[in-house]
Image (tube, rainbow, N blue to C red; front, side, top):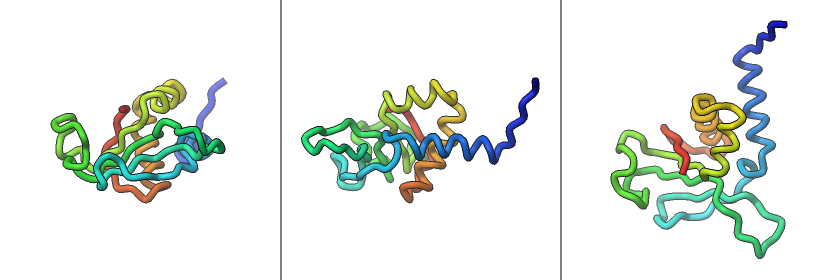
Length: 119
């Protein structure tokens, strides 16, 4: 049996997965170590619990805490929590995750990142 899925249908399936993943949506934001950077956290029902970040957004190279890690042309940049990244890559693969997660996070959170990396 041959199954053909159009790209638009695949995109919808992947974006629906992201939207229904509590580690990706909805998230609350907070300033990072540098006021220009932003960390995004899962919304927790337990106020005493401080969950790991889901991803961080760095609009400029100066906003990133470890100099010379990424090239200047990779900013603005999204760095995804490694545990979150691995689960998504296990499901969709590295290429699809990189392309689709970058687009979805930019669209969902009003960001302008040009690259995405596990962190």
